[in-house]
Every structure is written in structure tokens, then in C-alpha cells.
Length: 142
Image 1 (cartoon, rainbow, N blue to C red):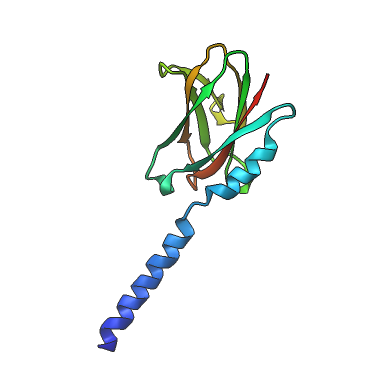
Image 2 (image 1 turned 90 degrees about the vertical axis):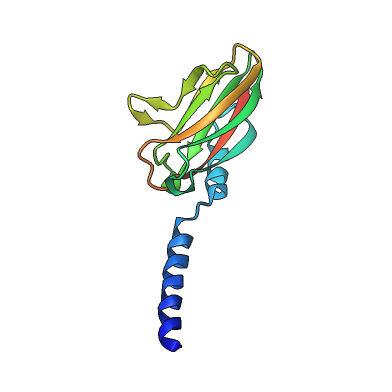
């Protein structure tokens, strides 16, 4: 009986350790992002970006933007960088109106001056990400 139990126990230990290492904790990244909003921007909302270790290729949220308001969206990944997380902003018609991707590189933030009130979709994708985990903050300025 011991011959069967030991190998099973050893396998369970390996799987539990590898699972613990791959878990995402976007809350800590979100807490890092909030103070990184530029001066003059007021914090509105935070977003958890959990790509489930690469199983999800996109994480999306929606928010109502108001005409005449500037919005800043930033992203923070492990080690204080973006870790390849790209922010794409779409209007209510699903037209891309902003992105953090510039010259093939994922920037940590971008500002969108809203010209039409409506629902906007904030989509996070992973371009060469190693952890598929991060946090984001949305801020506004009038």
C-alpha cells in the first residue's frame, strides 16, 4: 500500500507547487498602478488583468466616458513594467479609438480626450507577456 501512496503523494506535491507559482495576484499590481496616474487625474476605477497564465488572450471591461473629459488608462505588471500587456480602447461601435501600443512597444499608459459620451470598452491583450497578469487604473481630468 505504501508503494502506491508515496508516488501519488509526490505527484500531488508537484502539481500543487506548480499551480501555486502560476497563480495571478492582480490586486498587488492594481495597487501599484493607482498612484502612477499623472498629476491632475482623479482615480475612477481599477481593473484586474488576469490572463489565467495564457489561457485568456483578452480581458475586457466597459465604462461610460463623458464628452469633454480626458481619461488616462495605465497598466502595471510584474516588476513595475507592462510585461507586454497592451491596452486597447474601443467606442460603443467597437471602433478602436486608442491604444498603448506605440512603435511595436507596449507603453505603460495613454490619455484619451473623449469627444462623444457613451460606453467604451477597455481591452487588455498580451503581446509577449511572461506572466499574463497585471493591474490597471482609470483616471479622469476635466
